Amino acid sequence: MPKKVKSHQPMTTAQQLSSIIKSCRDIMRKDKGLNGDLDRLPMLTWVMFLKFLDDMEILRAEEIKLAGRRYKPIIEPPYRWRDWAAKEDGITGDDLIAFINNDEAKGPDGKRGPGLFAYLRSLQGANGGDRRDVIATVFKGLNNRMLNGYLLRDILNKINGIHFTSSDEIHTIGYLYESMLKEMRDTAGDSGEFYTPRAVVKFMVKVIDPRLGETILDPACGTGGFLVEAFEHLKTQCKRTEDFRKLQEEALYGTEAKPLPYLLCQMNLMLHGLEYPQIDPLNALRFPLNEIGDKDRVDTVLTNPPFGGEEEKGIQNNFPEDKKTSETALLFLQLIMRKLRRPVGGKKPGRCGIVVPNGTLFGDGVCARIKEELLKDFNLHTIVRLPNGVFAPYTGIPTNLLFFERGRSTKEIWYYEQPLPEGRKNYTKTQPIQFEEFEDCIKWWDNRRKNGQAWKVKAEDIIANNYNLDIKNPNAKEDFEHMPPERLVEDIVKKEQRILDIMAEIRQALAAQKA
Image 1 (tube, rainbow, N blue to C red):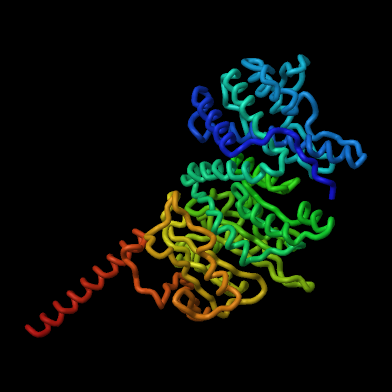
Image 2: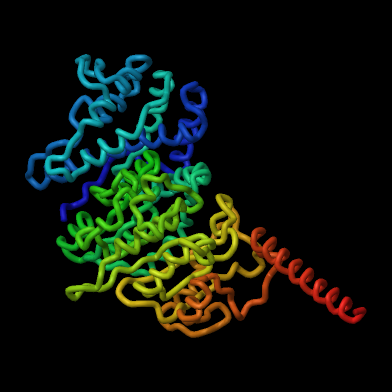
């Protein structure tokens, strides 16, 4: 591996970073072209993305020069950050907006040529597989919405104070980036997308335990949380140069159709050290299910697909007639079942960890038919029932983690009810679930015994009950105070109906006595 080049640039502290971002947001509020955080966050992210790319280019060029080789830049002058953005008294005002937005414009060097976004969208990798393709795809889904070039120049000058070339700063920048991703989650709930808490992601990766040499997929990767955690997990297994090559080129795959999460995912993965993230920018559900063959299958799926959303008829037509539905979560579940590798030719069966809403557990009709296939062709070995509020404040819908593998039918299902911490009634935005809370479940995972949190159910009992997987903990008393509102209403209605039935029986008995 090439020796890491140390940067001689001044360090940026966490306080300075926070101050820079706050100042940029204050400036953005003055621009009439930006409408709230839905516009400010993409704006800030693509600007940081280009600064990050240029810093990485500088490092790469120095490393290759030290190795005695010639370096060909990914982005040519005058489109590198250092050419048009780095100088405090550089191009500004209407000239800056025109250079960024127009198909043709005068550049900072005074020559006419493609505008910045037009140039970036035209980039193409030499062999269809490098950062040029990533950059082109990112900017095809983005537009610069700032109208005031002088305000934009102020933002560029401030972002220029962030240095992505110091390895010591990666954790600080990563912390800053996490705060941006949390803001992304705040704006996502309307589309059924609930970004997974890091503690849940880390737990799922821990128990799935992806191995180097396997292919890992997240077909609804959002900002890349599962892929980043899997990358960090696999990195500890790398010992040789060939191991690092496999990790960089053959391990991680994702799909994200929305431009902003796609951009955030790319930057998130690159920031953690993945050179060329292989993220598909289109809808993962766009392929007919029956056209997915062995070459398209993967070893591991880790994902939290959107739930509560709906897919159009054209997407639904890609699925079997008796399993068509508009419910996004059910379509993704079918896709994942199809994408898992079959245990043939000595290969291990594909395995999956997925977040699903409670409705998937007790749903009937199409949902029951999907679960019938799941239990017949897959081993659904574990369901972890998450406590209330894990996805607060984005949704109060109860959620579960399903773990299954391809190759043999389900004989029995282990359930584990993850408890709330003692004294807590719920999780909140400011007090989210912590990874340490999964410690007991992780210890139980490889040495399973029935206890107050864990119980086992035979598959035949599930089948006899119309594939209802919504099995309550037989060891726990019903806690009405902590019960989700929809379950509380359901319980009250059932009790009232039972009271009415008893009263009807009493009336009939009294009438029979009088007769």
